[in-house]
View 1 (cartoon, rainbow, N blue to C red):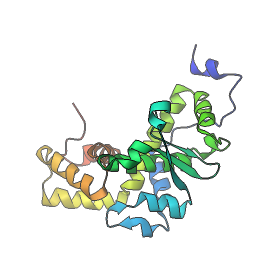
View 2 (view 1 turned 90 degrees about the vertical axis):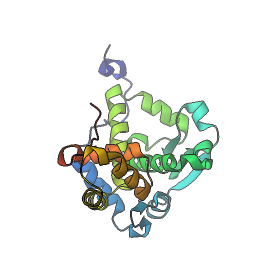
View 3 (view 1 turned 45 degrees about the vertical axis):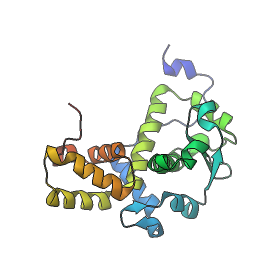
Length: 213
């Protein structure tokens, strides 16, 4: 039985569609519009962006990951974003914490209608269970791409990449160096940097080795 048949008759959630990358770039620009207060050279202060521009309260949910197998969730009812206590309290997870915040902000921006009536995490989990596997995949991949575009704005990262390619070099042997510097500059994990550069087409417009063979 396919996803459509499985959910037919009990579906009461808005349909989730796949955003093209160019549209996610535009949305990221809108998110950062009038938010220069959260841009610190290359680093985006995601906590300040969430708290001051969107007036969302960041709160702790103890034992969230062990119980629900997720690290964070957003409740649009009350504008609250909950983070697992281990993620928020562990300095070694600082970059992951920042990306998780950005990803939940992305869900808030582009998937608000899906969760608009959810007042508890259990209601949110139930709502997600009504989505097809394809819709769930759209939600996660789109949210990750938008989170990357928010934390690594197109104009800032392209300018920095082009500078590094000129100074360090533009070849496969320079890939790790470029990624590590960008990871430090934008305060995100190297994996997120690599994915962002691929989305921006640097696997074709540079000699960096960004995709696995």
